[in-house]
Length: 290
Image (tube, rainbow, N blue to C red):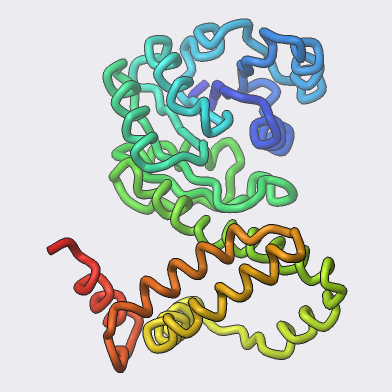
């Protein structure tokens, strides 16, 4: 009975986890799409997974010691606030939504007021094909209890990163600067290369120049180049903006690169200090408010 779970949201993540874990007898689910035009399709999804559907959030949450919220980011806080009055005393509310630490902290306050426990849960990779092996980070005062409960349900890759709500989501959000940023830069680059008829040559050039290295070393090197050559590189990237705009493929990411290169280049550090930590400290010292 201790493994009974309430799922809020039955999109890709919720349905994938339920099927992979064989949660037919353990889970009860509510998804707001059962109230709209997609109600029949959502109920069919419940049936295909063998999961009991609930007509209301209160019905889904009743007497459930473990709750897993997997909704869209814009609904995460509202869902936590709406769910709070219906949570069982001492229930573990695991918020697996991709939202800012501040949003999770606001949700935690609502859950705590109701006498339940909030756990910040960050999903660090696509749920398909990883399914229950997807890396999960947990933080919050009850992170260990939540990790144990999730492990009993079949999750295999759980890491506790602290007892403060917001720590897990901070890791995910800040990591996304790089992960999603590289995706956006990739699109901006290859769309322009295709429009200019030079895609193969551009990709071959990138293959020739890429030297894989740990991110610590990569970040140190990149900051070094920006501190020394940021102004020159900003000027070059302004010409890149002109190139992309002339092709009509868009230059949103490249405009941001101009701003960041110029901001770092204008710090006037001369010869950058050795090491990533030292560079970051020097940049912070130059940019902190007077």
